[in-house]
Image 1 (tube, rainbow, N blue to C red):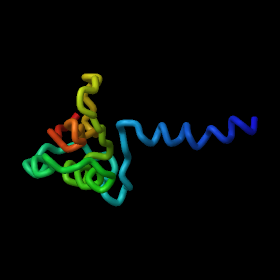
Image 2 (cartoon, rainbow, N blue to C red):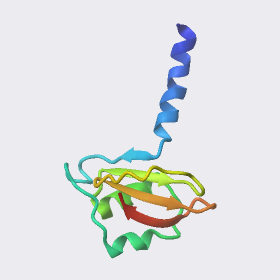
Image 3 (tube, rainbow, N blue to C red):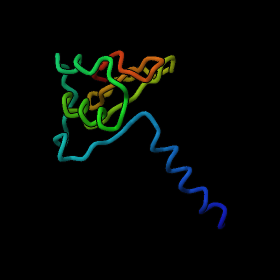
Image 4 (cartoon, rainbow, N blue to C red):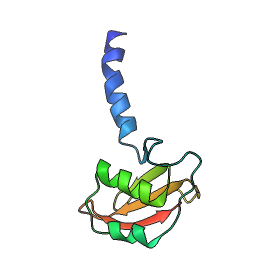
Amino acid sequence: MRKLLLLAPLALAACASAGTRHVGTFQVPEGSKCERSDALDTFKGQRASTELAAQVMAAARAPKLRWVPFGALITMEYNESRVTVRLDQQNRVMSVICG
């Protein structure tokens, strides 16, 4: 049991590094849907970070974000409350799209 408790932080860290991140409700209104705008193109070329994620989510008014590392396979289901950020090999933004 003790060993299991020691592994719990590792399991939580693995979940935290998953593709979807949530931003506080003060940044994105509850029930918002991703809104495509020219402002999302301004993020191209920037290095992925927590701060960038918050900026992208606020600009898109999206309560969820999905990072897509270079070469990763993703599901094609559309989620109107999510913004998807595709990254290049240097971990920089290639594209930002709703869904």
